[in-house]
Length: 313
Figure 1: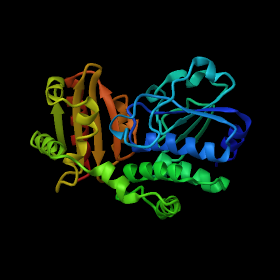
Figure 2 (figure 1 turned 135 degrees about the horizontal axis):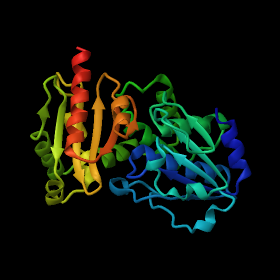
Figure 3 (figure 1 turned 90 degrees about the vertical axis):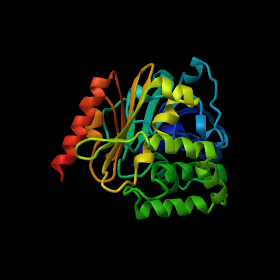
Figure 4 (figure 1 turned 90 degrees about the horizontal axis):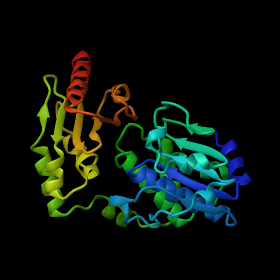
């Protein structure tokens, strides 16, 4: 699966790593992990990471992006990681590169790179990159392993989601053998202040339900601004306060921004990705998102999700 990717790595002296905007643990872990794999195994190559800031994941080692001129792309290989759609790539200068490669685990919605390795059977893009390293026989160092493990943990819901397979756990074990402090990592990822826990309780109290039991929250822009949080925190950071609720299979978080309404969709059982695609988004079968222009579209999406639940009861 990775032979052509490996050839391209050998053929280019400069490699520039991209991923999706507003990075999560898998996007940032993929970038940092692959960067340090390449630096460990190809010390003569120039390897850069570009994109928007790490945000809530700024605690991750080497999470600061590189500032590079357009000229750096001349003759370079650009690799886009953990990104399911062209519109979501952070820093669209990847198109300036001599060759482009995408490595991704989202459900395929369209090609936008010269070479694409897409496998939605993997729980994370980090899992794909860990498999790449194993198949190539590459040396793993601590930082590469720790970064890839971070993405595997976060995208698998701490190995709870059904994308977790025996292969996932074998690869995780290989990464853990590199000797990083797993307990310290988990504390950084999941420890919350009292204020953060209180805020989650406030969001939970906003929950509403459709006739067939789709749980949802809606947050106007002035509300999250008054809380002093980012739209990312209000949307993706809060969607799972509705998870693990008895009788709820699908839950959605809607967040107003100046660029539209962010929609974070989640499901315990059903494939909701086609509905996200219908409204201009995408993602995984049970975790996906979209950005819609107005509240009427929010109402239409909720109607579709409610019908889905009703039809499958």
